[in-house]
Each structure stands twice: as C-alpha cells, then as structure tokens.
Length: 281
Length: 347
Image (cartoon, rainbow over all chains, first blue to last red; front, top):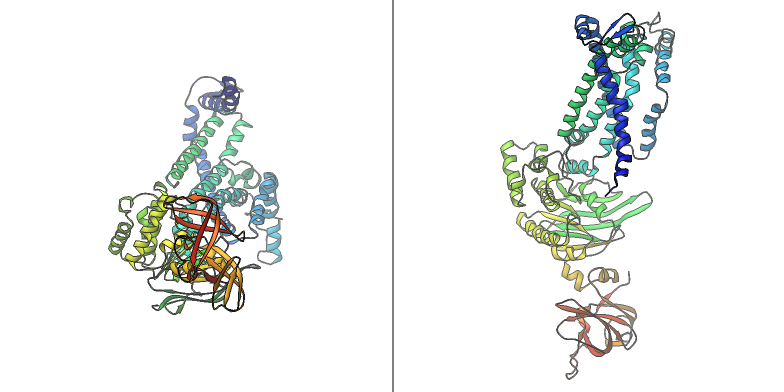
C-alpha cells in the first residue's frame, strides 16, 4: 500500500488547487451577488436587490438572450462546417490525412487576438471584402453593416471555435471500426443508408462534445464582441466586464456572472447525461 | 460435380507493386462447404474480399450463377459475410443487428419479426434478442454475426476466419455446429482459415492458397492422401519427404529401393508417418512393400498414438506414427507399402 506521505503529496495539490482557484472564488462571487454597493464601498449586507435589478431591467435579459442565440448559431455553424470536414478527412483521405488534420489544428496555435483582428481587416468598411465587392462592381458604397454587428461576432466566433467542434467529432469518427462500414454495405446498405444508420449514430457522442465546446466557449466570449461586435453585438460577458470595471458595481456583475455560470452548468449537465445514454461500450 | 454457383476466373490483384493474387481460377458448387486455406499473406482474405466486393480485381472475372458480380458494389451482391471480429453494430440490439439487412431491403415488419426470430432460434440466441452486443460473450457474438448474415438468405456466405478469436474448446464446438448448420440451411459456404485441422474437419473441399496461387484444390481426404506438391504434403499434416532418383524401372531413395514405372530422373515421394509401421520379423515382407531397419531416436507419446523419430541406415531422419500400445526401443525393423509413397513435385 502507499504510505501516508505519498498519498498526501499526490492528493493534496489538486485539492488545494481546486479549493484556492475555483471553489473559493466562486464562493466569493456567490456572496458578492447578494451584497450591494454604496458609492465606492461594497456593503456587506445580504440583499436580493441585484437579482431584482436583473429582472427589472430588460437589457440584461435581452443581452443574455442574444448571447445564447449567437452561441447557438455558432454551435450550429461549427457543426455544419466541422462535421463534413471531419468526416471527409477521417473517411475519405488516406495519404493526406495527417496533413489535413494538422491544417485544421494549426490556427489554434495562432493568438486569438490575431484571428479576431483578421476579421476586422476583412469585414471593415475599407476592408478586404468591401474592396473585393467594389472591385467586382457588386456594390457602389462600402457595406458598413459587415463589421460591428452580431453578424461579425457570429463569423468571428465560428471561425475561432469550429476547430473545437471538429476535434471531438474527428476523434469519434476515427474510433468507428471500419469493418462496421463494410458490414453495413455487406448487408445491402447504400452509402447514405450506411452513413445514417451506422456512422452518424456512432459519431453522436463526439458531435455532442463538439457542440458543448462551441456553445459554452462562445457563450462566455467577450473579446470578439468587443473587437468586432459594436454596440449591437455586445454579449453578456461584455456586460460583466463593464460592471466589474467602469461601472464599479461588483455585486451586480457577480449576479450576472452567476446567471451565466448556472446556464453553462445546466448545458454541461444536460450534455453529459445525453452522452451517457449514447455510450455503447 | 453439380453446376458451379461461384466461378472465379484468372483473378489477379496487386496492392501497389505487391502481387497478392496471381491468377486464381476456382469453381464452387451450390451447397458446397469450401475452405480457402493458406498461411498469413497467402492472399486468402483478399480473395474473400474480392468476392464480397470490398476490393476490385485488377484482372479476371467473378460470377455467381453465371452473372458477373465483380463490377457490382458490395451492397448489390447476393453475398453476405461473417467478419473476423464479428463487426456487430454496437448501438443496435442483437435483434436489430440481425434485422439490419432485412430493414435495408424493405422487408415487411411482421416478416422481419418472423425471420429474425427464426434466425436467432437457429443459432440459439433467442434469449438475448434485446441485449446489446457488448453485453454478450465472444462465442455469442459469433452466433449473432452468423444469424445476421444467414437471415438474408444469401446465395453465398463468406466467413473470414470467424473462429480465430475463440478459445480452443469453444472453437471445436463451433466447428461442428457450423458444419451442421451449413447442412441444415443448404447455403454455400466459403470459409477462410489458416488452420489446417479446422479446414479438414469442416470442408467438402479445400483450396490451398500459397503466395496468391492455388496450390491444390480437392476434398480433405484427397488433399491429405494425394498431395501433388511438397508444399501441400508438408502444410497439411506431417510427412516424410523421400528424395531420390528413378532409373531403369526402379526408384532409389537413400537406402530404399523399389520397382516403379516412373520416368527416369530425380523424384520426391511423400510418405505419411502413419504409413510406416513396425514390421513383424517372423513373417515375410508383404508384396510391394519396403522393409528397413532404423534406430529409434526419440518417442513422443500422445495417448492414442505415439510419434517416433527414427534414423535409417543412410542416416536419414523419419517420422513414424504408430499405436501407442507398445514401447519400442533401439534398432527396429519397419516397413511401408509402396502404394503409400506419393510422388510429389518440388514446390
């Protein structure tokens, strides 16, 4: 058996880490959300005022709703782009498989900021896209709705998180034994029939994991809306940032954060249950 | 022989620069149990995959009932396969696995219920219909894989080393069951294995494949008793290869000599260990037999039989199999019938 010292030295660090960097901050956040602020000071008295404020001001609900909508669309687009790509690389490339896989991964090594800024130069009113459109005489005036809009946020977030959707889907597809594909064909199934009855159901755990990544990560994103979103494209995290920063209303910021956190936990719980039902082995 | 169900004509297949099948021609009769036997790398699985449609031949034709199937995709061939590792769909129940082929070909629901029920009955898996494949044992998965293929009533069933993952006892049991099942359903089986005992026990005919060429095709007894080449003689069972020359109406192999009508030149004979027996010194040698004295080097007792390693006067080592009833030692007189020495060609 392992000695007591060994057990402590291996078991303690993660416990301390989780306590110090996750549970304690969350506890603080929780407490803050039930406190209030007066002038420059936080008042340490329990109150539900913050939550009442959230319910009373329609802006919070709207932004939260918009964030969920954008995250949902990012998820959908990421799946629509990521799944065919993963399927193609996994099932129809034999020699260039590694290369293509790497090409999908490489953008992940590029700084988030660089990728977000790239879209600024593409979508801006004197950007690449407008230059192209004008060059082709498809539009006279530069289109100004491209940048600083929910659309720009959607495009940028999809570009950034599609790889996160791709990876688990690709892993799930790679794990499907190829003799199952042959068995389906052998039993008379055509290509599409084989895909929908064998490949797709067996890839679902990966699809759900990919969707969870894309949704949760984009729901809490604040850099893309900040850089390309403009006033109409702000998301819930931007509100949190401003409440904690310029507005100096930590308690209200904490309550918004907590709502977001609960939403994310709900999504994670739901998808985890779904995945467990889909586990076959 | 009844009319051929499956005809394979001069089929060739290479993977890159590697030739795997080099002109295979083979007929399989309806209702036959044919085993393609060969070492790993002999091309036996490739031949099976060509019949199933997972690979395309470079040259040659494959036909069922006279109609070419090699241009057809796997899902359009009247052929079903039992895969080496069963390949059951993990997300479907045993019942749904077996029903898969029927659902694909749009068989009516009550008919599916009935036929899947019968197929599961046939392999004694009715009790497990609602189970997931991961929850049943390897032998049971094997049976389900068999039912899944048979339920479609294929003209031809292909089996790719289906028993290789089972332990020895279960394997022997499944060999007998499979053979009985084949008789019962009357479907033509093409069975691939590297195990010569399995091939002998189950097959109506064995096609011995070696480096992409058929070495010999015939019923197990014929292949065993009348091997045509040294390779066949050595691959199927154990044998003694006697090398010598034939000249002026007599064969001389080391210290053995007998009259024969072989053409002059070098010759090789295959003599099975069980065809050599200790001779009764008090009696005359039977006609057309060879007697020789040899020293017993080693004995390996196998219960019902005993394998002897002996050295004859010329210093040649031979294997002898005899009933394990008496103990032999030292210098012993042996004999064999000339008829049992089978002329083979070097290969």
